[in-house]
Length: 130
Image 1: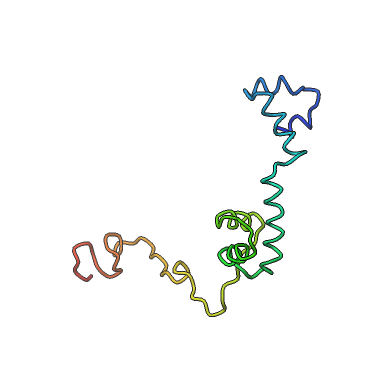
Image 2: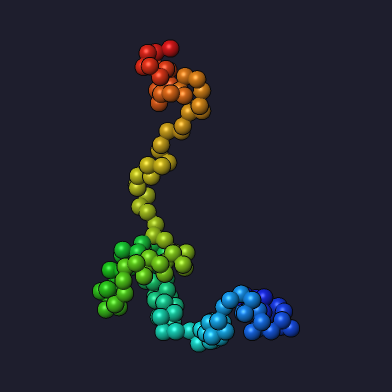
């Protein structure tokens, strides 16, 4: 909506908001929030910088949360996860880690007459081999 009003200033704010059924106070609150962000957004920005610095790009969210807790920073685990996800940070798995079950799953067979009724490829629906 803001982009529309910025591109077409001749339309006017009030008529556009009236057509979209949006109170004008909501629009002006959005504009104010862009200029002067709330305390939570400022704290999130500060925490993201601290998370990025502490992790070195290898720690996951549980370890980052533990480090922050040890340092006396009161922050929730899910907030750390959200900030890491928004910043594109992820922990590095150990070299000998096991592959995910989805990667080792056997591929599904194409639907043919012999496996249409049974999960076993050489059996019919009645259970006798073909």
